[in-house]
Each structure stands twice: as structure tokens, then as C-alpha cells.
Length: 122
Image 1 (tube, rainbow, N blue to C red):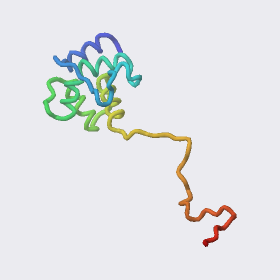
Image 2: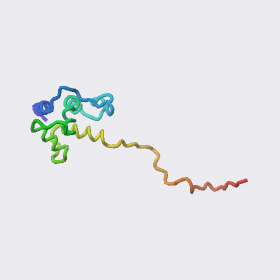
Image 3: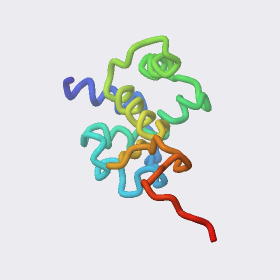
Image 4: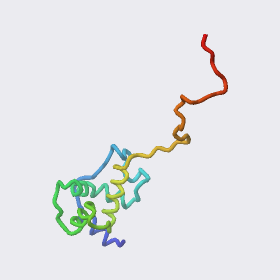
């Protein structure tokens, strides 16, 4: 992707406000380790517009914004860095967190375990 393409994308989704998601990324997008520096920059600088387009709170104003809405509705494939970064953001924030453990689920309920001895009642 050339610098002209990146500049055009940044201008197409320009916003006066910075976008932060302190609930999911309290240290910021760039420090989370989930996004490249360019993706983090796109989310921070253009995320307000991306979120508004995703939530249908604003209407698309140019072709790139229209294509972004089409991608979010599943009518087109993501083709630029803004669309791919927002899809990655959605995947990380809407997918349930996976928890891995060394121990698996117990297959026994505990009621059928026999240790070879019987306890007598007195």
C-alpha cells in the first residue's frame, strides 16, 4: 500500500476527535500488541468516524465510506487498511475471550468414584 493510498484513507475517514476504547484497550491500541502501528494510528485518528459508520449514526460521505459500510454489512470484501483494522478491532472486542487451562473438564461427576475401601457407618 502506497503512502498516497494511506493518506487518501486517512482523509476519507478524517475526524476531529481521537478514538479510544479504554475498557478493552486501557493502554491504547499501539501498546496492546494486537495491532500494527499503522492500524493503531488509523483506529485512534479515524475510529470515531469508523464507529459512527458501523453503527449507522452517520451517512457515508464518499466512496471509501460507502465501501466501508458495504464491507461491514457483508456485501464486499475488506480492501483497505481502515476496513481491515476495524474488522480486527471488532473481532477482538466482540469475540468471547478464550480461557486455556492445563486441566481439562472432569469426565467423572464424583459420585461413582471408588477408592477400594468402604467406609462403615457406626
